[in-house]
Length: 88
Image (tube, rainbow, N blue to C red):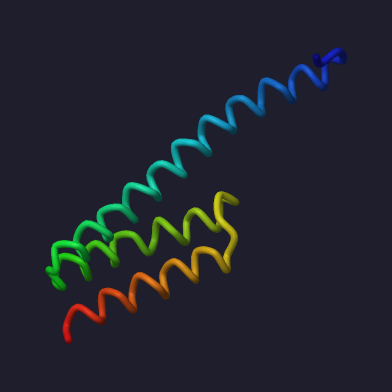
């Protein structure tokens, strides 16, 4: 348990940050799920629109420290290639 005033404050801050980060992570996953559902339905227009909406959310996750830059890039690359494959 935290003993010093500084460590008590850090513990409080960590709890608040964890809640914020959890909300951001959930928001990113929601956008990714919408892209997955659009891909599963086979509608390329809807999938492309969902991907365009998800892209800024992923990048925001990178700037906020939720995701690593390469992880977000890999997810975008794989999703965009799957959306592109729907047109064939």
